Length: 135
Image 1 (cartoon, rainbow, N blue to C red):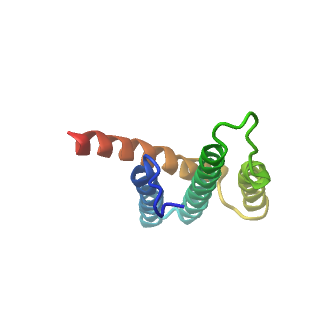
Image 2 (cartoon, helix red, strand yellow; image 1 turned 90 degrees about the vertical axis):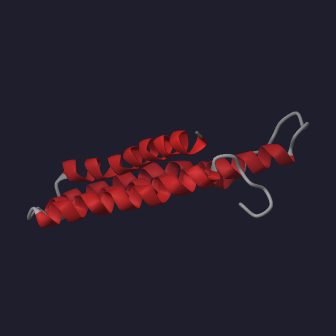
Image 3 (cartoon, rainbow, N blue to C red; image 1 turned 180 degrees about the vertical axis):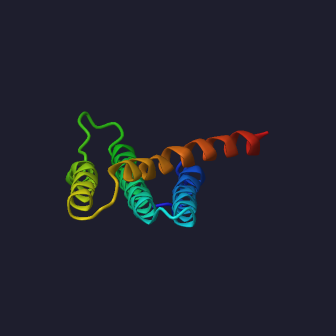
């Protein structure tokens, strides 16, 4: 997708992706070092779900941009059907994973929610990075 068409913000998008993994892994490592293995597992699961959700959201939006650009000038633009499927699948996967892990494993639900917040922390960090890099 990134080939010859450079989508605005793609570097920041990539930065948010790897920062999510780094921040979540650092939090999980800290939890392990403090002796909270169940919390560390929840942090990792939440972080990976947040990262996966972000990647699928990005792919869906990239497909919409390509479709709308290709159909510029037409009265009714067609959206690829799989964009809708991915939108629903993102939330279904998160819900199913959290349910299964919470129900059948002894991983605290709160730790998975905090792990999902690694994405928000990464987005804030990447935004601050862009502010300082632009000046």
